[in-house]
Structures are given as structure tokens and as C-alpha cells.
Image 1: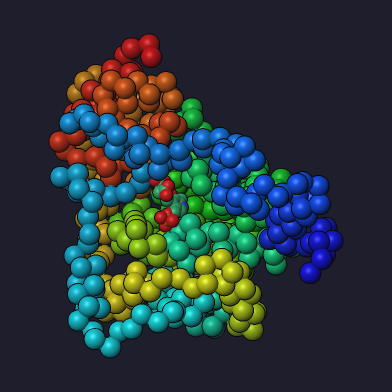
Image 2: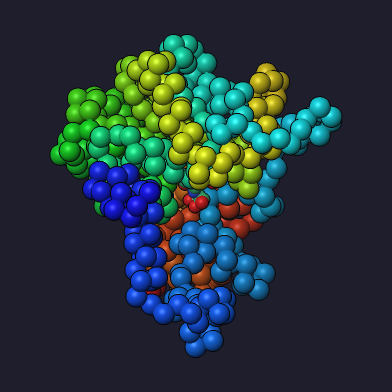
Length: 451
Ligand code: KET
């Protein structure tokens, strides 16, 4: 392939990236005297590192909070940054059903460690589609859903983004303002153009439904719209079912392509089916959509990196072609996905008893979070903390979007060793009855002082 083939304006985003790289390398070979580099391949011209010019990159806005927390020696420190469930004792939780499933996998001596197919574990894919779309989904019955196992929610969003950048006629994706900090980066690097639509109203700490409808109404027809299936991150604010129906009608009338991010199925209401309702409404109308699923939170499989991307198509013929093209996106990215996490999920989803046990454990996690909301709200009320804190009990899912500003957040970290993202988001799942008073004291202090 020649350099100029890559610079064609009709080339795909990945071709363009490779093209830019090739042009860069060719220019370097033509103009630079590279003999010193060849003579000493790991050192720069002056004998120093060839990477010496790099600037220190900032920590990730979410995962960097944990890095800072780990460095703090204080015994009262509290990590409310990352959205990861903790027990009342503040410990990470491995679900009992996950332990049982892993035991089954270990006991099965016929299991092997061969590569999975590019699309991952086929049984896992089928069960994942059923879990999110519903066992009786007409789209599944009509065989027009293409599902591939991906590296958790993030990997599913990235694969879906690259697929759209390559094969969908509109390259603009609208994301909520605000949203999970990784969304804009994932989709930009996938080759899409990222724009935002209004979502949150700071004055009511609720949904800006009018702004949302206006912005989607003004979007270029055919654009992609990223929708949080439930438990919106970071605001904890979801549309009502009636509002979802209006969003659906508007989007379908303008041919906007729904791309659902479902990272918290079961965490919003405690019910897997209730939390999947908005997605199922869009599938029920017969139109197309994409869904990225994560098992990080709802099965506690964070580090196993297990998730799925489903593309609901109009016909089984199209779904087959879509799958063939998804394989071309995945193969050069990471070849094929890991086997262990998907096997755990498949064992749990295929067995009625384990499945039921999972739903109980999931409900218990969701209930503990709701109880933390009540306890924090009550603790602030008991302290007479100024301001309306009712959003703590109204918001949904893992997070409360407190409304605290970056200066207040940094004061709480410095004086109280409480860690959270600088936008004032706190992970309610990181809180326990023992730590609620400490957090309430800190919030009370910043709410009563001029910080
Ligand atoms: N979508 C949303 C909305 C989301 O909050 C996360 C993770 C993901 C996708 C991806 O999760 P994965 O582990 O790739 O399945 N959010 C938490 C963790 C993180 O930032 O990575 C968080 O917001 O704290």
C-alpha cells in the first residue's frame, strides 16, 4: 500500500491514523539523519532517552482518585471516587454466585484454554442478548441481533464506535452534558465526532428534559445518540418512562441512531428487567440500535473485563453481515476476548438457581446503596446543614451528584481525607453506616464555611 492511498479523504478513520503515522515516518526517513538512532537504538541524539521530550500526563480523572487515595496514610480516609461496590465493612465484594460458578469451572476437567472465536463465547453472547433485550424479544426470535463479547463496557463502546465510524453514514455522536468522563475519549479515538446534548439542570439537580428534546430535535438527522440505559453517570438522574417514550418518538422521527450504554443494569431499581425497559422500548418499535453491556458492576466482575456489544438489525441477513464486519474491527484490536469472565457469566445465566441467587445478591447491593442515600440525607438533616439535599435520596444508581464545587471537593480531601471526583460526584457504593457521619461532617463543614 502506498502512502497516498492512506491520505484519500474517503478512507476510514483507522486508515487515516495509519496514514498519518506513515507520512510521519516517511518524512523522518527522508529528512533526518538517523544514523545516531540506528547506532544506538534506545538512546536519543544526545545520549538521553528518545522519550525525554514527553510531558508527564495527568492521572485519569476517575481512576486517578484511587491512586491519590492509596497514597494517603490517614486511617479515616474514604474513597468515594470510582464506581465500585463495597460492603458495609468497606471491602470489595465477590458475589457468592460468582464463587460457585468459578468452582464449577475449576471442577470441570474438560475445560480448555484455547483461543475463543473473534466474537467471543457464543453461549455468553446469546445469554447476554437475552438478559438485556428480554427472553421474549422479537428481535432475538427473528435472529436479527448480532452480539459480540467485548472487554467490558468500555471495550463494547469502543468496538461499537469504530464499527459506526467505518460503516455508518453519520459520523457525529451526541453524548449527554455531563457524562462519564471516558465517553468523549472513546468515541473520538474510535473516529467519531463528539457533540453534546443538554441533560442535567443544576438549578433543580434534575433532568433538563426541555433542553434535551430541543438539542436532539436540532441534531443532524441520522446522528448517533449515546443514551445511558439507566442510573445516569455522573448525575444519577434518569428520564421517566413517559419521557423515554417521547425521546424514542423524536429520535425515530429524525432517524437518530440510539447507542445505549448499559453499565448498571439492576443497580438502578434492583430489577434487571425494569432497568432494561428503555432499551426494550426502542427494540419493540422494530428499529435498529446498539447496546454496550457491562458485567463489571452488576456481577462484580470489574477486573475480569467482561461485556458485550449487541447490534439490533432489521433482518437476520443484515445481522450476519454486521457480525462479519465486527470481526474485522476486533481482530486487529485484540484478536479475541478473554475466556474466564465470560464463562462465569454463562454459568450463572444458564442455570435457573444461580440466576435467581444472582438477582437476590444484586438486589441486596442496590438496597444497600439506597439505604446509604437515606442515612446520608438524615445525617445532614440532623446536623442542620444548609441547603436542599433531597437530591441525595431522589437520584438513582451508584452515584450522587452532590453539587459540591471543585474547591469544596479539594477542601474535603485535604481536611477530611475524603476522595471523590472533582465534579462533586460521590460513589454511594463506597459508603457504609460507619463512614456516613464522617462524610456528613465534611459536607456540613463546606456548606457552612466559605470554601
Ligand atoms: N459506562 C459507564 C456509564 C460507566 O460509568 C462505566 C464505568 C463504564 C461504561 C465502563 O465500565 P467497564 O468497567 O469498562 O465495564 N464507570 C466507572 C469506572 C470507570 O470510570 O472506569 C466510574 O465511573 O467510576
